[in-house]
Length: 152
Length: 160
Image 1 (cartoon, chains in turn green, blue):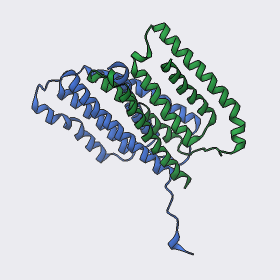
Image 2 (spheres, helix red, strand yellow):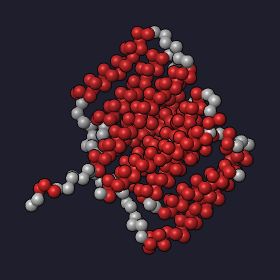
Image 3 (spheres, one colour):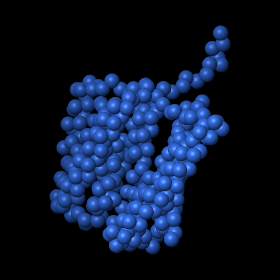
Image 4 (cartoon, chains in turn yellow, purple):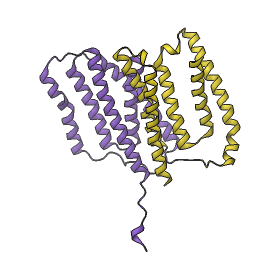
């Protein structure tokens, strides 16, 4: 029964990520000018899907930790630390790259899409399938830092 | 005791792996079709010789069918249990290598200036994928197919 649930979760993950990407593409609609842009966006959307399949192929035996209070308590602190650290590293490195190359991330929407699609799909996959709190912290940090960076 | 209320037989891990493998090969096929269409429209490829387009697929499909018919299965099939850490690292490296190789191959495909040659090349890759799909049903086949897919995508994102 557990296994069946896991497989459903996997399909849901892929579906949700595809939906989110389509939404993001429509947000950046103004940027799409030529066929090349369309091809690039489709490619960056598809990027995580073969990887997801490959990871699932390797880790077919799920190792779902029991979501007990004890488990949560034990991983609370490292997960929070990882979250803060990855936000700081994410924002700092993105600022550094922009400062070095002298270009804005907004002008290169493909990279934003790429980071977003990869992180969101691994985030949802981790959240539903493996429930690893530390990984959850890192991925949340990356997503948050991307959001902060684009927002500022 | 009570054979009517037997629980349905749970699907084994190797079955699920096979399913994932099938999905992955469908994705690769779709990506190859996508590549052909993108290159065709973007580079405005001319059709130099119409008769060649009809015969382009035969170049690789005929040998594929022949090989498939005479060859036995090369691999054991999918494993039931987990892979060890060494195996995972090894096959991840293989995947990365194939990804790099296929980024290069897609670049070579973009240099082709006539539709019939592009079609022949794509059909050759497709035949290779089908060969892997039907004969090398293993983690090796899976990592090669993942590498092909990622290579095409990486080319499309960064170099196209």
